[in-house]
Image (cartoon, rainbow, N blue to C red; front, top):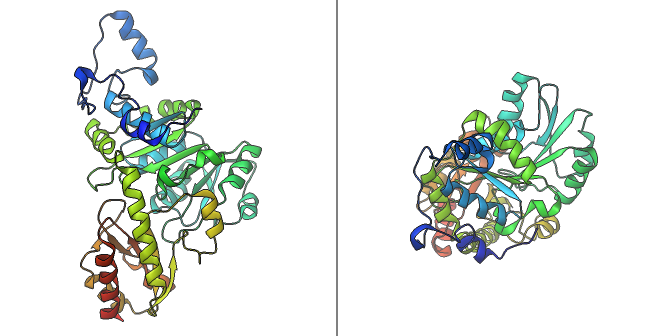
Length: 384
């Protein structure tokens, strides 16, 4: 498949013939589409994958975005969903049935692990969680009925990597579908399909949207796999993205290649400064040279995002609260990927955090680095 330059993808692809010479793609806020005659109507109903019939299936605004997202991920096709969870769920469900088995990563997104461990168990689908850093451990977890290896590299909160080439090769040799959540790195810094992974999912609510004002998800892969997901899951579950949400994401990705280097630069600088702070036990960011997976990170990724974690040298929850509450420019919120900097303590989302009570996740936004650095340093001083 011929690769396109990012400028061509973000500014031209899918926009070659916009109506009335529009520079920006119009918002097709319509639920249905009409036809000039019986035969055209019949053709669309019989092949909804490739026709505009009902926005619950395809929509012109949505499809322009899908073309761009597929090209960004070096995939043949992409499908937009109403949320990242919907994209994850559909990409998994399309390839399993009762009696099958899934292998996935321990530290993956919480709703992914909940879906695999609890929801799918209701329908007789088995699962095994692995750390994932060792391909031998992952291979040992496979069973004759394994149908999916689900990856997330880097992982949530701990930012562990999997060797995508090794895992993809293992999957192909066993006839197992490989799926990865690539939300953290974005297609700007990592293209899993280039390493042989079958399907790539994203929470478009994060870096793709980039403004914390939209919820969406996407799956990218081969024409065959996306057609299967579209017909088996998307149409049957109604996880349809609103055209306006697609338009917002389309607007957001125009600047993706500009925003990501700033997130990366800010995260690297904050990580390095925190490493030097005597009150910090360690920092988890795979692009740091001190990371034990740095060589793998450099092999698979061209850069990193703004998301990382660090652990304070305390196990006192009151001190953790004081640190979090002292921050002025880091907002206390879930999610990440917008222009703003965020803080999310492990202890907020885990009732029994144990040794991870002082683990803090940071999203480095687009603010000035000195403002962010001083905010973190000041909050640490006030708490510890």
